[in-house]
Image 1 (cartoon, rainbow, N blue to C red):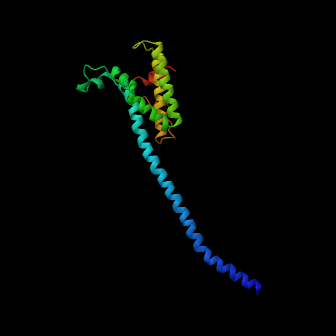
Image 2: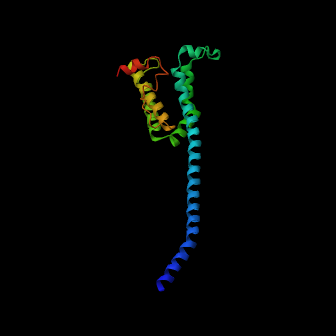
Length: 183
């Protein structure tokens, strides 16, 4: 009889504990789900902010690589030097502010690729006069820019991309494959 009382006691405790356990697990599950949803919302917002910042950082490079025909197709660009405009943009306080912002929330790979691109630009600026770019320096600059674009691509959600840094430039430059072939 003692075993029967013990079994009845365990059954009674189990029947009372089961709803409490289900309630506790439901609360924990809800809280984890909510935390995950919030994290995903923040990541989406951060991704949008990153994309805006990346676009601002890339704007001077877009100007530098734009064809003369594309530049002159806009009447407001006539009699304006796009190289001077791009350089002025890159030297502005606003551009530096955006680059600083990117260095804070960009992925490590994006920041490293940007650093490599900018360090190459700084070194080239010390070594050569404006307009004296050799094919080798142009190729190296394009390689750095392609790597930067590739890392941005990965940073905004295309982590499994199979493109390389030169393929990132083919839509942008008519002679990207020629420079690539010179490797």
